[in-house]
Length: 374
Length: 184
Image 1 (tube, rainbow over the protein chains, first blue to last red):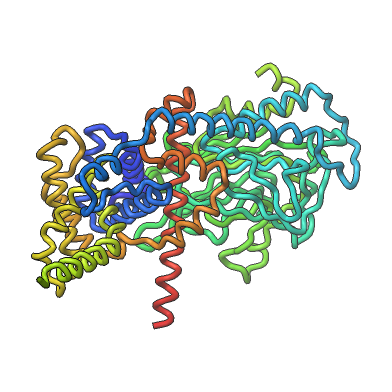
Image 2 (spheres, rainbow over the protein chains, first blue to last red; image 1 turned 180 degrees about the vertical axis):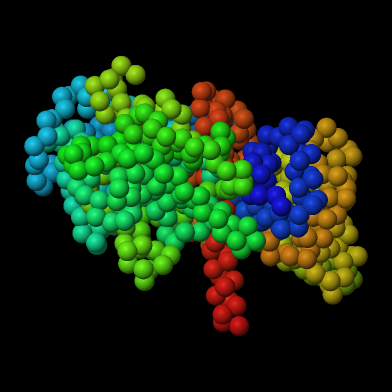
């Protein structure tokens, strides 16, 4: 059966009015073969028509109009004028995006309680800021939270990804010093069972990357959540630290009602000696290379092949939580279901593709002095 | 003597039918024709033909069924006359699409309120990208070119935005269907 991942690019090409002969042929074959895909295609066409109508493109000539009126009604608007509008829009986005970082680091919230960490100097923060501004523009960046002042309002931490939609809804988390250790830097602290940070991301992704700056106080639980989707449905991912300090990344596949879990375990990344350290953790679910890759402080620490049986999986996120498991699949099993993180998270990013080794390294180095030279 | 009022009545009846189904028809034509410029052109011909042939319309049959047949033939004529080199589906597929559209006309008439609700859920910058791309006359490839290096990014953003919007609309529709089933 044709997956959404296979036919959506063809639908996109159709709606973008950009299609090669091969793509057109593929679309024809798919539509001929599958009624439910045809239904979706018709629905998409109707949404497309509605959008067009909404923008004011209903330029159909009434049959009772005279021919001159008809001609005028269908005359396309000057392309240059439209392009002008779009250029302004693009420049406008750039400007609004550039405005945001000005309030970012310099105005970061003062932490409620100080800790004895040696503050990074200004050049480090400048390097991070410069890098972060670029990172936010990545078209595949689904979510990016830095928890800086201005980005956290009440229970919402703004998604700073330029094209991301999902804010993080936080409750029961405290403000804490960030990894730069400077007075203007902050993170969020998960401590009590009530701490939670919820996010909802729509869509399907062939590959996925997750990144986080984390400082752990303890590994209290059998599984300590970094990022866990609600429940555990096919295509969903779970990213956790086990009580022995190894990272567990897993995703689920289903075929004919038969669920197959795939678990990837990294070497130990944490023990009690690292209690005051900020770790830069990352994982890539890379279906292009058929690999799961684990990262610690910008370096790949482990990778393993995704089994052939699992290569057809399309990942989804939907409702999920950072630092908790909001909607456990077996809520009665407390040991299994309780997955609260005990520690702090400074930055968290969700990317809808597999980041390269270099990109993982850059994410780590953005917060170190070396970052500036990159 | 009585021709004039009859003609007026017929005219009003036609306008009533046509305006009620125009959006669905446009959607149906959009599913068969590759660009909005071509859709606009085909739709003018569809409207003219429907009006010319309105005498043959049997009010006992659904207007959408009759008009979908006309629309399919207009698409075929359009391809024959002007667009051999453009992407127009083969005749057999057009027939299949027509049969689907007639069988499930609801797939051609999404709820406008859902569109508005879902549009407001989009962040402003994404909404602007989407609406700019849907401006009549906007050439997405030109827009992407103007965007320079971010051409690929522009498409990705546009695709993702459109997909999340459409998924949002579909979700709302499913919710409504579910609710209606429960009521029934």
